[in-house]
Image 1: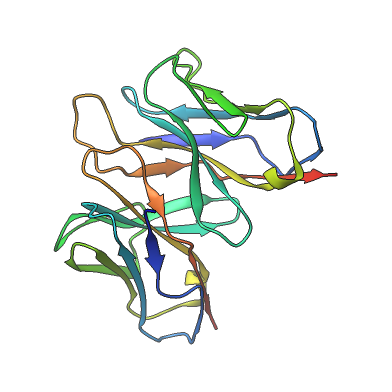
Image 2: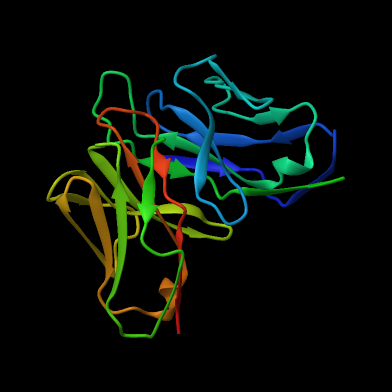
Length: 117
Length: 112
C-alpha cells in the first residue's frame, strides 16, 4: 500500500536559516503530493501541492518539487521566520490520473519545526 | 471562506461511555473523512464517506463507527470509549475527484 516517510524531528533553527524537510513516498502510479502545516492549536492547512512529476509547488516562500525518479517531495525554504514554527506533514493522495479518487490522504509522521529569534 | 467545523475543541469522557464527535462542512463536498492524529504516527484514516449514507473503512476502524445522514454532516462514534482512544481527531472534506482536502480545527479527546 501507499506510504510516506518524513525525516525525523524535531528540527530547531535560528531565524533566517535554510530549511529542508525530507519526504519520500511509496505508491503505485502517480499520486498527487502535498505538504500540510499545523500551527499550534489549529487544524491542518494546505501549504503546497504538486500533481505530476517535475511539478514545483510553492507558497509563502516554501517550495517542493515532485521527483518521480527518487520518489521524493522535499520541502525547502531559504530563510525561515519565527512564525514558521509549526508541525509539517507530507502526504499523498489516492488520486491517480484517469482513476477514481476519494481524496484519501496518506500522511507521514510529521516534523516539528521550531525557529528561534 | 470554506469551513469545516468540529463541534468541540476539547472533550473529556469516561471509559465505557458512548462518544459522538460531530463535523459539519459548508462547501457541498461529497467526500468527508475522520483522521486520528498521534505524536510520531502522523494522521491515520479511521473512516471516510463519499456520499450520503455511504461509508468505507480506513486504516484503523476498530472501535469506531460513523454516520452520514446529510451531505454536510459526518459523525464519528466511539461505541465504548477506551483510554487508548485518547487522541486528537481531525475531520476533513473534499470535492468529488478533487485533490485538496479541507480540515477542521480538531477535537482533543481524553478518555479517563
